[in-house]
Length: 593
Image (cartoon, rainbow, N blue to C red; front, side, top):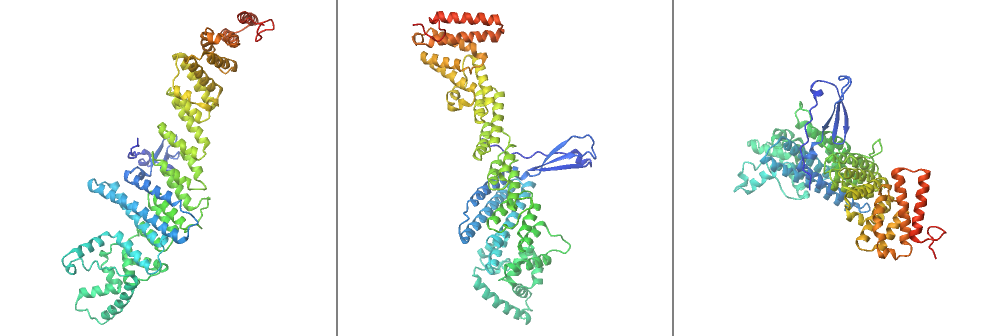
């Protein structure tokens, strides 16, 4: 049964509103806030504040699940593939990531149409920014388009994130007279190749510039504005920046009309100048602006750093960094504490997933693909997973067993065995103790089985006891339990001779608890009356001997012993056995001829 997502509880911290000093301890997915001794002497309140509420959104949960499959597939790409083939696969994987982002964004927008909420609105804006940044990184870093095709990719990038352009273009083309449509001049476009465009653009640029210099269109203001746009006049473009809405849209427009064959190394200059010209001098650039500018400057690490600060979870930076690392773009950047940037971000992201009641299973694969610290992190985090049900415990156990985490396996089994024992579920408790290879606990549970048998006269969990196999050798008491159950099966099947031999071996092995001796005595008495047993060579004599020894031990156990009592009991037992068995003067165990 799938566990339901619930909204995280709101934590009120009185000390914060009272102006008291607070201390903080950061953890995976949450914060511990405590009142300091400086302002609240003797106070012992600790508050848990959850900071990563995104993992509790059902729609974003789909983002985490789908991207997990893409991530696992990326790790399987062979290192020995030719660079050209790997680049094609990396671009395809990048587009897969973006398709998952867009699918979640579209689903959120549908939800907002029915039930607008501030949280979902915020998620849409975050996903829009994430896709915008990822797409640009794909163009500049992963696909790494050269001069010429670079501008075409940037045009696609702007067009994808400026959706009203395509919508207006469709409206214009579908109208009866496209040239007379009021949005006709707002969306000029074409489908010619880069070479065709470059030739036409150069011809147009020279022709239009000449016409502007000659004032050929001075009589028609609108035509003159169009000519200035085509020639890339910056003042005219800025006067109509409401059609562009963002500085990076202005950048691509400026490149289209002024520098259509721009080189990647020249982008940073145009990006900086366009942002300076487009934004108001009094306005402070938004975090998104700084991130995009860093991308145009080909500063990958600054992009990742700024995204880590601006975004409220590690999903984006972890997956993007992992992809860039596979593209060999981050290989030289190592952190001072030993792990590289990729592994650090994956560890942080996976640690956050472990705070969720079901997403923790995804985190295991991320830890598996962190070669330096992943196994250690998994050992620490797996112990924090609440074992709410046996099904969940089995999932956790299987993960630990597959990774040879023997200490965690024992810990989980002991916890579940103790829980089952407290609930008087002896079969489950025994099964968990056997998986933990805990001989002491298996002995304890075996004795509980025997006590339960003495009280009820029947065994519980017969299927488990009958099918333990070699596992019964884990402890002597467990071996006795299984063999004693086997004795009962033989007795029920009227195989009295075999039952007597087995009972005799159980008595002579001395593995039965003393509290069970009387039960063995009671079980043996009916066997002495069976003809099948009485006709066996020595079985009844030895059985009688051991039975009397049992009686002796039982009396001593119950009433204590003294020298006189010991001598008297010993002589009586020997005499009765000899008389019954007809043994010779040599003593017990020697038949009389």
